[in-house]
Image (cartoon, rainbow over all chains, first blue to last red):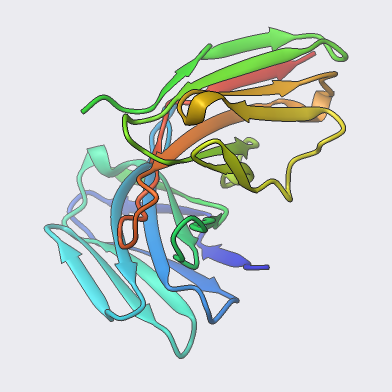
Length: 114
Length: 115
C-alpha cells in the first residue's frame, strides 16, 4: 500500500520567515495530495490540495509544489504568523470515485516564534 | 453549511468495557470515514462507507471494532472490549463521493482514554 513520509517532525521559525515541510510518497498511482492543519483539540482542516496534473498551486501565503517524477511534494508558508502554529499533515490518495482512501504522513509541529 | 458532528467529545473507560461513538456527516455527503489518530501520529483509516455500504475496512480490528452507517447518513463506531492501546482520538470525516470533489472534511474527534 501507499507510504507517506514527512519531514521535519518539528519546525520552529521566526514570525515573518518562511516554513517548508516536505513529504514523499511511494505509490506512483497516487494523484491527489492534500495538506491539513490540526490545532490542539480539533480535527484536521484542509488548507490546500494539489492534483497530479498540476505542478504548483498557491493560495495567498500558502503554496504547494509537486514533483511526480521524484514522488515528493512540499508545503510552503510565507510571512508566517503566530496563528500558523499547529501540526501539519500531508496525505496522498488515488482518486477513483468512491475510493479516496487518504494515507497520512506523521505530521510536522510548526511553532512560530514571535 | 454545518460541519461534521461527533459525540461524545471525550470518553474515559476501563479496559474490557465497551464504548460507542457517533458521527453525523455533512448533509448530502455520500462517503463517510472513521480514522484512528494515536498521539503523535497521523490519522489512520479504520473504515470507509459509500452510502450505507462498506468500501474499505481492511484496517479495522474486526474482533473488537464494529461500525455501521444507518440509512447512509449517521454512523456509529463501537469498540468491545476495549484495550489500553485503543486510547486515541477517533475522527469521522465525510466527502461528497463525486469525481473531482475528493476533499474530506473532518469532525472534531472523540478522545478516548482506556484505563
